[in-house]
Image (cartoon, rainbow, N blue to C red; front, side, top):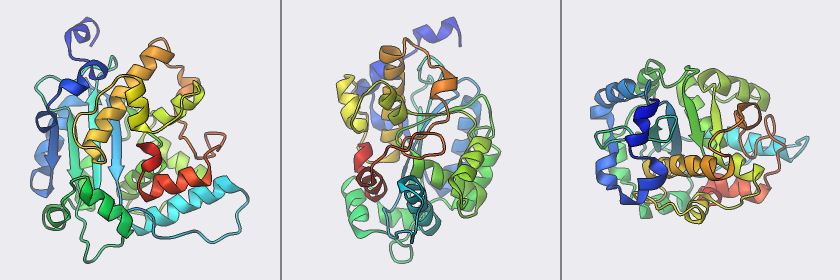
Length: 298
């Protein structure tokens, strides 16, 4: 990946020129194993994985008392992730210079089994996702079983791998759903144990929203992308497109504000808005929006 990467397309420079139908691969139950094999072939050379999820909003509130607002935010995350099912996960792959894999496909959008007749959801969130193009009839009929996904993910070298760098945006809920499906258990009672579990499965994490805070940038994902002159590829509020945009913003942010490199002692393994690894300065309004439609992230 040394000198060769310089001749490859860099995600921060070419995103708006890409055809999302050619670079985002839709994954359903029937092609899950085949597509995971392609990912396993990529991950050694393209270990920067940007992740985004779509989920059915917020349906429950934790019962107090709480020691502080940060404890409330984690309990809100936990009670909803424990109750609800993930709808989509997008994974976007780059190398350490932000270069995309050759051959077109660089994003995999995993579509999970979700049945509006059986599964719990917040109505406004589902209507929002329908308008974004998510086909819930197909999710009910052809969606991926989360247990099967967990089995192939565990053996994929994506998780439990110190060489993989995870890139996300305001991502407490994203990692909550990831850990829920990997462990097939409810999230830990304590936030500190949540971070311990996260570090086991995803040892190296960058949260773009946390990086923005450290350089006094504000706004959601789409807003900061516009400020950095990055165009979106694909439909907004779908996990594949959002993960690819997150990847592009990360590498442009690293270039413009961090001189091309990050101090991992300072910037790695912090999640914006959760208190175990941050100062917990997310407002309750931001956390609510993040859960109910991810509007604070977009």
